[in-house]
Each structure stands twice: as structure tokens, then as C-alpha cells.
Length: 233
Ligand code: SF4
Image 1 (cartoon, rainbow, N blue to C red):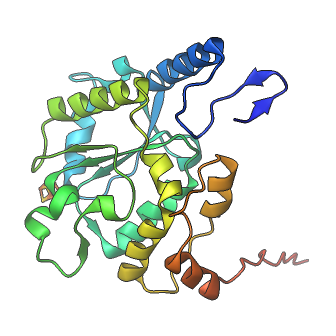
Image 2 (image 1 turned 180 degrees about the horizontal axis):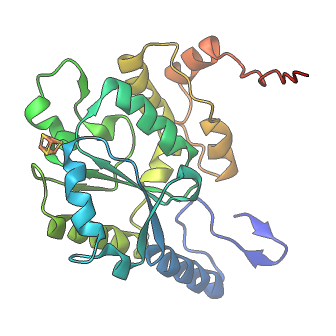
């Protein structure tokens, strides 16, 4: 457990804490988190066409406290709205890793569940859960806005009950996710985010955080150089 002064803060592990006030505090935080979520406005496949009706006046996800956000740094939910090509998946993973924890992923459309009608395609990633942790799937080709709202409500309930723990799984089993990413993108795949450092920070580094795939990453990793500043007179 980490503490700031005498104030207990939420930590990565799910253990009930001895101080009952701290547990009440955790529940209050989860209640607030579930009711004020920003959704990253990043559309992938054709299922994205059902999002505008879910967001606007007819179905209106804003009444649930969910609003679109244009930057991953300030977003809590990543909606993957349909199939992801191999090229797009790289951007989706980069985006996911830039989001602050706790963060949640919703896979919309059958294409995110098992490849959908593109299951034979050479260009798409089939099972999203193999590359990043998915908290809720909403199946359909494409799902109706009612189903999207229902999925969002399911996620809210899971957050409140402390069951939406995909982001923790990414830190705890990073070697598994990285291995699948390397399988698709090649061994020289790297992102600028230090996931192992973050796992340490959240007290979530487990036996499966590092392994054979993180070793490959270390071998290939090229430190990012700051861009040279050029001032022309
Ligand atoms: S499930 Fe259907 S609507 Fe959704 S991305 Fe796949 S093909 Fe498009």
C-alpha cells in the first residue's frame, strides 16, 4: 500500500484494507470514476457509424456522464469500433498506452471478438483481447445504439464493483500481450511508453510482467533521442 502522508490512496492490488475508512474511500472513488468518463473519439472500423446516434440527442450517452474527448491523455475509455487492420492496431496500442490508468477498453462489433466477416483477411487482427485487455465486448454487425449504451452501463457497473481490471491485467501479464504484438508486428516493435516502469509505479509488477518477449524488446529497443532544435535566422 502506498500512502501520501496519512491519507491512504488507491493502489493496484485489490486487497481489502484494514482501515474501514480507506475501503469506503476506495468505493467512493470508484463511484465517481464510473459517473464521469471521457471517451476517446477514435473510430476504427465501420461499427463507428453507430456511435453518433448513441452520443447525440436520441440515445444521449451524456446523461450517463460520458463525453467524447479528443486526446488520450484525458480519456478513460477507448472504444474500438470494429475491425482493426494491422496498421491501425499499432496506432490503437500506442493510443492505449498513452492513456492514464485506470483506463478501460470496449470492443464493439463482432470483428473485435473473433474477426467477424474478415476472419480470413491477411490484413486484420482477429481477437482484440490478445493484444490489449478488453473490459467489455459488444457483439453485432453492427450493434444498435441501445446495445452500445447497455455495454457502457455494464462497464459502469463493473467499475463500481471493482471488476473492470483490464488495465491491471496489461501490467501484470505484459509479456503475453507484448509477445502477441511482436508476433504481428515483428521483434523490433516498440512503443515510447515504459510499461514495466508503470507496472512498478502501480505496484502491479508480477511474475508475468517480464519474460522472453520483454527480453527481445530490450535487445531491440532504441532510446528515443530528443529532436534537434533548429533556429534559422
Ligand atoms: S462487425 Fe460488421 S459493422 Fe462491425 S466492423 Fe465488422 S464488418 Fe463492420
